[in-house]
Amino acid sequence: MKYVLLLILLVLNMPLVLAQTDQNMSSNCSSEINSTEKYIESSINQSKAILLVTNSNAYKSHATNYYPTFNYLYYKWNTNGCNVTLSSVNLLFDFMIKSNSASCGAKHVVFVESSDLNSILDVIDAGTTSPAYCPLIPSNSDNHNTTSNSHDKTNIILSPLKQFKSNILPKDVQCKQGFMLVLKNEDNSPACVKPDTSKILVERGWAKLVQ
Image (cartoon, rainbow, N blue to C red):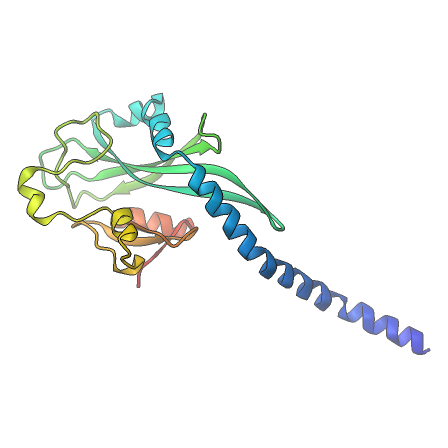
């Protein structure tokens, strides 16, 4: 009878034991996973990733009648226990509508690349910014980087990445007029995006708003 009771107690407590084991494993893996992710990220050639997009037919098709601007890059991971592998490299581009109007709007597109940066796996329409803000259009539409005109040089705001690397806290990063500050969920790094884009990124679990 004693052994029967012990067996019943063991069976009843088994889910709790397994849950605690999973929790301990997850806790022990966290540091290892973060270390692996940072190592992989440091090996990614971001210039190559951007070039793959800008040379693609999909990019050129989207750029028709638009001024393209690279916004930021983020990663997707596959995790199995303590093992983590890079699933894809994702680049968000803003395509400003060609217009001299103060109400031009923009569309936002995510290009999903393979982890080896050799192919584009998918192109995702991330929504459109309401025609409420139109940044200064660069004079060279073939350049994916935004340029500053001479009369703006007295009030230049550095990119979020440059501010972040200057030891400015992510939550204290400043954005240009018409952009909102968000923090990427994968590494808590800052990014400045349009209001409509921020909603899409938050809804899809890619970023969070700064309170």
